[in-house]
Image (cartoon, rainbow, N blue to C red; front, side, top):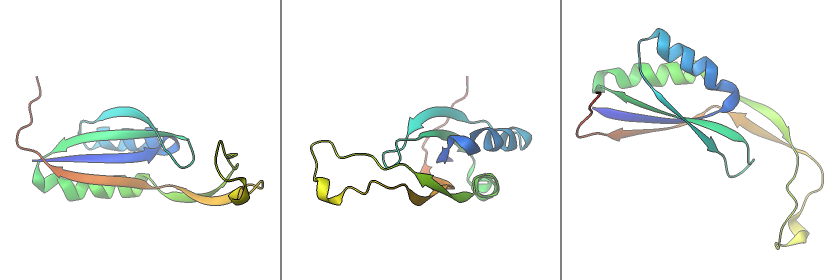
Length: 109
């Protein structure tokens, strides 16, 4: 038994949720916030049998693609102003950060 925990950008959340439903996989969605861009994320908790892990990873990969985006700089608060860049910068966003954890027991009531 495994717990697949996937942190995805909000923009990919609905597409991933629908793909999991189509595969008859249950997931719990949690709202989360990334620390780098301070942008909204969705964290999916998916409990599956060991043999289902690769299929879940495929679904996540198919539905959560990374892309380039301009990010407005965050001004330093109490930090060093010398490293502050006032222009927007292009950063890679999207994709998914996925953790696969062993689970001793899983109950669905």
